[in-house]
Image 1 (spheres, rainbow, N blue to C red):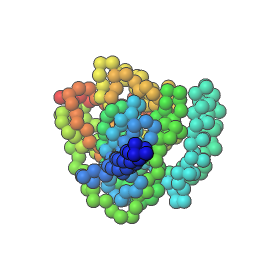
Image 2 (tube, one colour):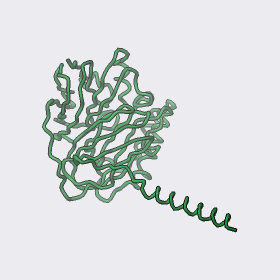
Image 3 (cartoon, one colour):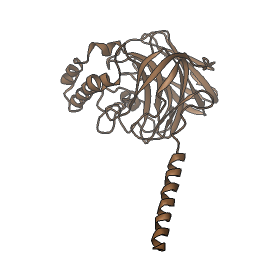
Image 4 (cartoon, rainbow, N blue to C red):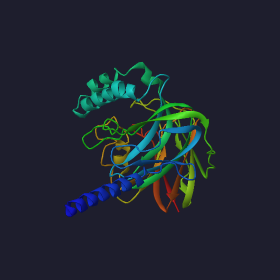
Length: 309
């Protein structure tokens, strides 16, 4: 009997220890000491806070997955939310892409015609540019109060959008103002539909804060506007392959794996006209390029190579 009592006590003690251990497990800290907001990806998900203040916000994105991703912020029109996207937007893009993937491009384009009118009132307000696996990137953007969708629509190797696979998150921007100040840039560049990317041909190594000003914004053939991504090029890099890959409308575009010889280091997602976003990067000596996620970026002067000395 005494032996049975001791076993019961031991089991009880183990249960108490397990409960205590679980209570000490904390959720990842996503708000950092410098007021920046951390975003993490480990698989096909976006981990971050649910609510942020309006105004300038700095986001540090840790891509801990094995895929290239980006994070774009899309401001919903009044009265719309994630439920509306999941029922009215995601299925349309999935159907259209499925048709394009089996060489039924005309039918795919026709499928996109069923997008609801409110979709064209969504405001793309910037975000974090393409970021390679096991890489951290940082962007600072200005956000007005409202309801936003964060998503990545890079495609898996089977042609399915990451967002369709669950890589999205709703985030609320409140009326209260953030304490983050507008960054001071060390590099300034601009992008426009008419002139493409205007940037220098060479930069010095070290930590840089790059300001991207959108002097205009216009919808391209892939139904989206232009943006800026930074890539580091090694000897294997094929710029023609990269040029083609940047168009999601292409069955082989924006799909895993990303082109060889390319490391994506972040950037700024598309913004409305006259808006400016900032991103930080530690530039090391080598070859780089700024590029936009649009069809035929080279022809549009939206692929700009440069050297870091």
